[in-house]
Amino acid sequence: MKNILTEAALTSSYSETVGPPGAPSKDIRRFAPLDAIDTILVEALARDGRMPNNALATLAGIAPSTCLGRVRSLVERGVIRGFHADIDPAALGRGIEAIIAVRLHSHARRDLRTIGDRLAALDEVLDVYFVAGREDYLIHLATTDPLTLRDFVLDHLSANPSVASTETTLIFEHIHPRRVRRD
Amino acid sequence: MKNILTEAALTSSYSETVGPPGAPSKDIRRFAPLDAIDTILVEALARDGRMPNNALATLAGIAPSTCLGRVRSLVERGVIRGFHADIDPAALGRGIEAIIAVRLHSHARRDLRTIGDRLAALDEVLDVYFVAGREDYLIHLATTDPLTLRDFVLDHLSANPSVASTETTLIFEHIHPRRVRRD
DNA sequence: AATGAAAACAGAGATCC
DNA sequence: GGATCTCTGTTTTCATT
Image (cartoon, rainbow over all chains, first blue to last red; front, side):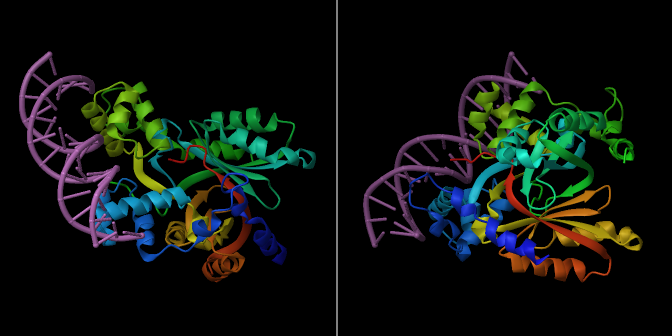
């Protein structure tokens, strides 16, 4: 039980992958705590990614041009990873969401990343979580119907000799706390 | 366990609302298949939620005003649920991400939604999945460090008499296929 | 790093096809 | 439903503090 926590401390090194190889790490600035204004901006943009710059500026109590520079800096530092429309999978005809826990054979675990990246590239896949513990991945996906879900498991997982086991769990509902409808 | 697929069929009643043209349901439009242009718009905005309307219109091969109307309609129909900045939890000082599988006592399952909504409201929580199967929720969260993660489990889950069990799984990495960095 | 003013640009609406 | 035109307002740049 406590081993899990130790493992967390050891494996949370996002910092390694940031920045061009050879360049001095930008992690100091990236992980420097946000000041009060940046916090306001980040929170507001997480709620409404299309909030007009001047409204943002007013909210934060700064000039629009300053606001623009701040937001740009947040994007450059990687605090804001991007701006995205949140699409309802059901509206795209993908009404079934599921989580599939996947375990690889130990000998295939060297290809963990490659296999995970390939899964992530599939149309149905919404998220891939590389996890510690019994399983190797949790795959969050959306399909049009149960048969397509079954086919996904068969075609992309069971058929792969690297995959040792899968366990499919249906999602009844998915709540994204920080996402509020705009308009 | 083969019941799972049956269960899916029973719980995925989105399809019921898709009917022949003229049927009296407000959901018909929402779940009607997107045409080629809407599909382009949705895909582009999922990648870059701040793409200017002009650029979108050019990409889709339609006039800017038409494009604006299309996007508005997509938002109104709920196809686009919102626009959001994607914030790196690590940059906010939350470098540890985990998934906690939570099971409630059967007598508490009547409060499933309430409890889930309360969990979703917590600062650390990024997603709550209500799931079928052994567990009731999967909670995706981010904390500053392993101790805070432990405290979260203790304070918000184990301390709750409705909670029968929890199982915490650390996330090494999380891939969002449809999210690409904007500059 | 933040600001204010000016230039460039995108968005909203009316009108017509 | 879609396009064109025009007006309004915002975004952006840049010189300045």
